[in-house]
Length: 192
Image 1 (cartoon, helix red, strand yellow):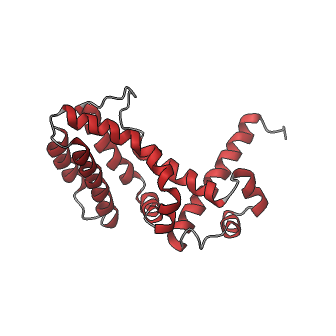
Image 2 (cartoon, rainbow, N blue to C red):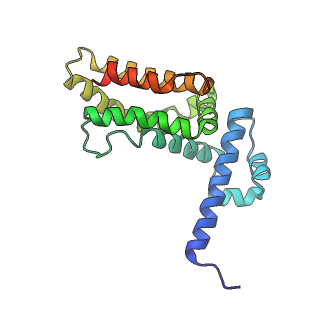
Image 3 (spheres, rainbow, N blue to C red):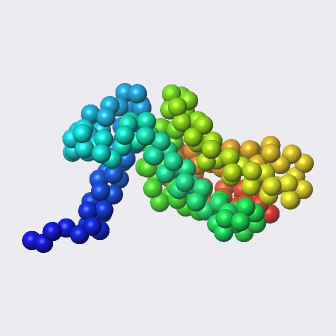
C-alpha cells in the first residue's frame, strides 16, 4: 500500500472537520449549546477529545464556524458579481436561491435555525453575525432607495424579516407550505 498523498490527507481532514460540525450542530440544536460538551461531540463523532481540539481551538470557535458557514451559504447568492450594487435580477436570484437551498437540506436548516434562536447562542454570536450581515443590509438599503422607497432601511429590514419568516414557516411545514407560490409573491411585491 502506497503512502497517502497531501491531497488525500487534506480530504481526510476536511471530512473529519465536516463530521465534527455536523455532530456539533445537531447536539447544539437538540440539547442546547451550553449542555453540549466537547467530550460528547467527540464521542458521537467517534474521535478523541484531543483530536477534536486539533480541528477547533474551543467550543466557541466550533460554534462560530457553524454559524458563519450557515450565514455564508444563505447569503452567497446575494450580489453575485460582488459589485456592491443589487439589480432586480440579482435580488430575484437571491430570493429564489435562498429557498432552493432550504429545500435541498431541510433537516440542516431546521437544526441551524433552532440553534440560532437560542438566547445564549445569540448573545454570544450576535456581533459576529452582524459583521457578516451588515454589508448585505447596506446593499439592500441602497437597492430599495434606488427604487424610490421612502424608508429604505425599514423596507430592507421588513424584506429580510419576511424572508426569515417564510423560511421558518416552510421549515415547520415543508409538506403543506406553498413555498414556490409565496416566493413568486415576495418577488412580485418587493423586487419588481
